[in-house]
Image (cartoon, rainbow, N blue to C red; front, side, top):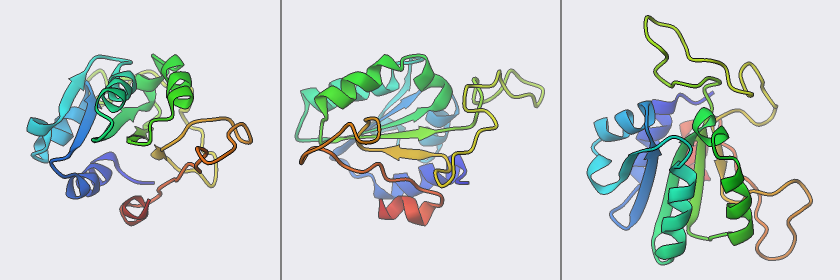
Length: 162
């Protein structure tokens, strides 16, 4: 499994000034800013709004690549946004979902994790988290030239290839 910080370090090395990166409130934003990328990104986006904000940016600025670095608990708070992403299919939007299996990426404190999400303790081989989503649709639902496979990454080097 890829550690979130390792994935973010790899992503930071791939991001240029022409790309917009959106991160949710929590550890993802903290790590992204520690890596020196916060000044040119939209960080600390409210709960449930990382993917919808990234979608809005991708539609409003179609000549720029937009990357949402979302999290499982955050995304669960606004699952309906995935239907809109699937409907609009912006070619310039990439959604990365970091799955740590719990709400509160930093935990409530004292070394405890947050409440478990629906993915807690679940593993769907061969799809280890985090998943990199470039198009979202149920299997077999997407056809034609707009349909793209959903690449997955189990290591930073595989993430770089996708």
